[in-house]
Image 1 (tube, rainbow, N blue to C red):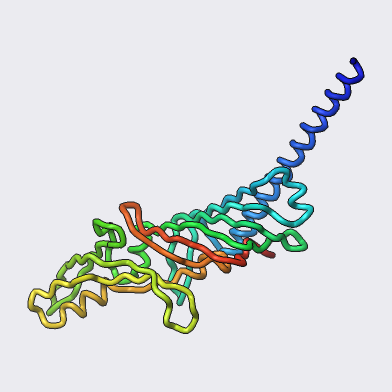
Image 2: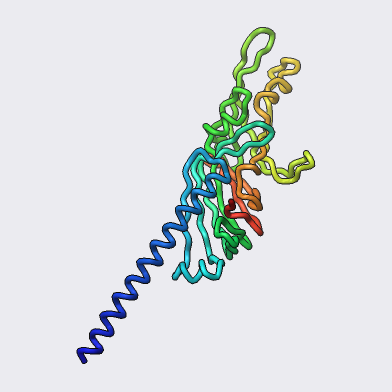
Length: 238
């Protein structure tokens, strides 16, 4: 009986040690992967990685992770020399095949969400326009000053924000903001002048992990929310 008790105690101790080693290993891997992802994305913000599944070491040995969650804050997407900041980007990668040197991997599929705040959307407009919530999903309010006959007229319009296929031959999607209606007030050319300030397109592809694409969007009081999805998505790399 005493011998059995000793065996049980040794088993419990060894099990605890193995669990401790496994948890240390997964923590180390999460930190290293977060560093590589942030370096790859060129993000000025922060990144967090969570690797799911237990035990981690058996997944690592087979170089196949069940699921990896990524949280990026303050991502900068740059396209055509213009920067658009994503306040939040949360992505989930499934069936991740690790590279031979464990520097990164590729997910069979992935999905996620991202958020652009109105402050960041205002900065992205680059026309001096201010953007706020438009009162219903998919709508934004755009306010801009327009020079007419030496006077500055301030006009606000309700615009629709949509996700459209890029027409520049590069593929991918663009976020498009277009005024539903512009009050002309009988001034010739006023609509064209206002739309030059309020209407704009922005690409965001370069701020996303390779293979992860925009698939839908909407807006609410917090900002513009993007839905992401993709296959064969690059998680990180050297």
